[in-house]
Amino acid sequence: MENATILKSTPKDVFLQLFNILTFYLVTIGFITLYIQYINVLFPDTLNYYFTGIADAVRIASAILLISVPAYLFTEWLLAKDLLAEPQKRELRLRKWLVYFTLFISAITIIIDLITFVYNFLSGELTVRFFLKILVVLLIAGAVFGYYMWDLKRKELVSNIPKILAVFLSIIVLGSVIAGFFIIGTPFTQRNRRFDEQRVQNLQMLQNQTLNYWTQKGLLPGEISLLNDSISGFVVPTDPKTNKMYEYRIIDQYAFELCADFEAISDSNSIYSPAKYAMPYDSFNQNWNHKAEHTCFNRKIDPELYKPQILNSSAQSIK
Image 1 (cartoon, rainbow, N blue to C red):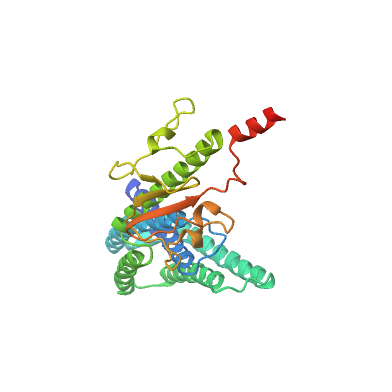
Image 2 (spheres, rainbow, N blue to C red):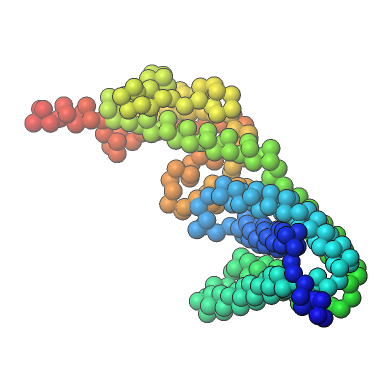
């Protein structure tokens, strides 16, 4: 014990211990974030405004797991190899400080999680979505606490448990990331969806500019290029992928049509529907649902609601 008491951490020990615990924290954060976002997708909440925010969080969490888990397992292997060569390093002060600090964080997380559960339960929050989120945090924090408690108490230097846990963790990570392809779509699908979101935004701008043109001049523009305005700086947007002009047609005196080619589904039956992830009162997202095909949106102007300024000016001059 005397050698263990006077043993000091080398720069290598400091690097490995700090790097190991940091990657472990990243793995834990990645798991919690990933599964909470999966719950957000599978159990939508009208207070979650945008699906894109969920998809971004899933991509970040997946990237964290795919990079952090191999780094963590590699440093675990190096530390285990080091401990076999010098068993007294189990008593390193730095190692014990980091382990006990991790136990402290895990215990606090469990306590806060349970407090949140009781508070929301008393507040009437009884949704499946809420219970699953609480369960995810509780299971992950409990697993962390249990593993490090076992690691502190174990006497044997060689154990198959870390190897089994390493294989289990690798399988869980791969399964979790692959599950994301079925829940939020593959990277290719998500890219197409972002293109479609940009197309919808462009069509919204064209609709607004067309309406503005109508209120200013009392008629619809003969072609879409007439919406270009060098004073305001507005330039008619084009398709973000093909750079083609969007289709614009005049149907009658008050109605027009805007068309675009979409690559992903966005109807009300899909989990990616804007209606499910937008504010209930967001009128911009209520009438832009589309299939993965060429889609046209018919818009009719109510002349009583949107009165042209030119007519208002004429009426005032007559008075």
